[in-house]
Image (cartoon, rainbow, N blue to C red):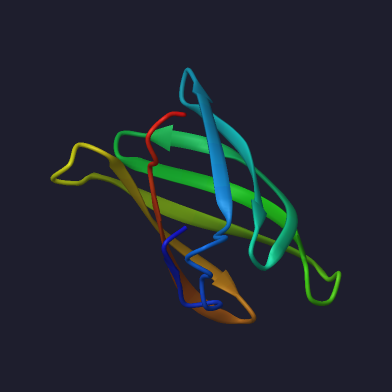
Length: 103
């Protein structure tokens, strides 16, 4: 994750997301920064991903659930970007995740 309206992203230890897909079904997990553990499941149709998610906030231990939609974009460098639209704390939010080189 490189940016988020929900919280400041620590550039040295951002949340890391792992996405998997088979036949249009999306699932994965995330952890780091403000989240101790997170999971999501959903679908992909064209360049749009829709997911339901749940995670635990590191600061409070609060369990947060929600739904989101991501637009898949390809950067000039060929890497994928996900522009994620979701609601949290009763307000619309936006975050951006970028693909990292496989290591």
